[in-house]
Amino acid sequence: MTATITSTPAPTRRKGRWIDDWNPDDEEFWETRGKKIARKNLVFSIFAEHLGFAIWVLWSVVVINLANAGLPMTLSETFWLTAMPNLIGSALRIPYTFAVPRFGGRLWTVISASLLLVPSLALAVVVPSGWLASQSHDTQFWVLLACAATAGVGGGNFSSSMANISFFYPERKKGLALGLNAAGGNLGVAVVQLVVPLVVLIGVPAAAARLPRHEVHLAYAGLIWMPFVVVAALCAWLFMDSITHARADAKSYVSSLRHGQTWIMSVLYIGTFGSFIGYSFALPLVIKNTFPEFLAQHPFIATYLAGLGFMGALIGSVARPFGGWLSDRIGGARVTLWCFVGMGVFTVLAIVGVNAHSFALFFGSYMVIFLLSGAGNGSTYRMIPVIFGELGRKEAAEKGVDAGQTALTFKREAAAVIGIAGAIGAFGGFLIQLIFRQASLGVTAQVTAAETLAEKQAVAAAGDDWSTSALYVFLAAYVVFAFMTWFYYLRRSFAVARVPSLAHAGV
Image (cartoon, rainbow, N blue to C red):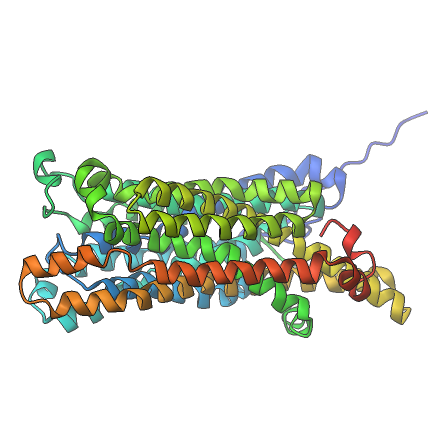
């Protein structure tokens, strides 16, 4: 007897590295052909997305160096400079998702990576220019705001990158792949807040750098990323692929809007990812203007580590996959609930830290908040496909329609909701910075009204608890988010009545 040996054909590529026959859910195809291609695309996707996040939050470090660069801004103005890229990046997330099917994952990664050269050049050329230094204060602010706004292109990269990689992996592997992609991108926040404070001091004597006012080279903060951006674009062009059947399902986006679950999960994602990205932007600025005495006593931390702000982003990024892993074992809603409860408790401790002028208590509390927000990012994303899977089963049972087709429809809607929630959640980061700005207006007005430098410093020192009013707002928000999670997904009588078996589905 002669054995017949069959083999899975290699994916067919057309010009432009398009793959026509891609079937990762076929185990033989995946093991023999698909895995290697998917991993290669994941690696270069993470690299490009990492740079996108780095550029997106670049101004969180730039603003704390503007005075040393001869461009002093008020506290409320600096919050606008960090909030604007957050707002633009949030708005770009949905159109970036649709760009992958329109241009292909390979070409769009090249385009989206190349766009990062715009904010890098603006920071390298316009901000430190003699022309800007010669302008009036109002003109300086608006030019800086325009330059900061261009950094928003980095915020859209997350959605297009996640959408692209989701097409490469089988359903059973998507969780890990998307978790790695998201965490690799989020780490860009920590990297930029660690690297840029060191880069802008290249060539500045150590003794001078530790003075309250010292020279900085803001051009370097933009120039350092440009070679990496070029490499990322070239690698995407040379090594990545596009999948033919990766199509934008606009119908799923529209139909997903009819579900109340879409809006509930989007609000909850404001509390998790919105907290992560909002605090990532704002924390270095908050530390600088809340604990000046601590930074004065620790010039190395103030000068070279931007007040240790990078540690929060690092902890939150690493915690994201852990939140998804824990949700697989005890349920996403339970993890999300306890994350919000913990964030509320440690916000109270952060308020105590501000009032007691204890940097250690405030900083330690915020590191836990970052940890919980990162874990909550993973748990909320885990909830979405489970919820929509249950909704699909409920609709199939009630209407007597084909269960398989209904499951596919709701799976597509779940993917759409992830994109919608991602955009709305990122907008939550803008709201956090807006609330911080509003809280700062009182002390900013008093500092402006003071006539001498000594009076201005005295007013600023007396009002260094300005952030507590914002923290109370965040505390109230976490109470609301926790209640919503419990009410909609853990209160058994309500959850089971709306979606059969929801309480037992690992939500």
